[in-house]
Image 1 (cartoon, rainbow, N blue to C red):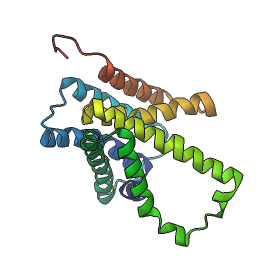
Image 2: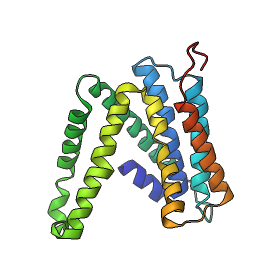
Image 3: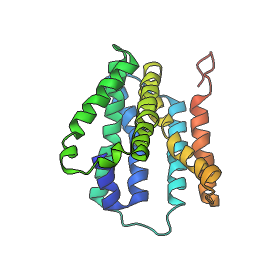
Image 4: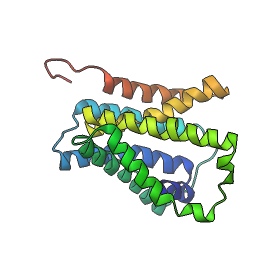
Length: 214
């Protein structure tokens, strides 16, 4: 997260997000080959290519002007994507020996302990209000606990490169919710990005043929 937000601050939202999201599946594929000896295959290559280009179009469609590209920002974004890939591989190894729920519970608690010193400086009295407490509970359960448990469970039955590429559904979901719930308007470029992204994810998710052609 630190790498990603600093990348966005340094090189802009569009470039930082595209490089961060786009580098994570590629790095995950390379690391999976080196660590586990798993070859991603042609299906993953095609699906990842479509998904990354779809993400790029979707993000760029929301930018009113070009942003200055910073080499340092690019490196930070790649570091963010690499960190996410390493996280996925680490969870993959852990869920092979422990339950998905136990793994994510321990990781979540360790993360909370690392962030605990912030409580000393910040003003968190709003947490004890009805509205603030409700938001914290909702974010904790539905924005972290449940998604991370499902992610860990998915890693237990799915190769790491495939799982990381499938998580590119996040900008797809955000774009569709923006149209259906918030009433946002998407340009033709954005719809093209959604189509490419959905095509890549669909291509990756369709069942393999028994003869192993895919």
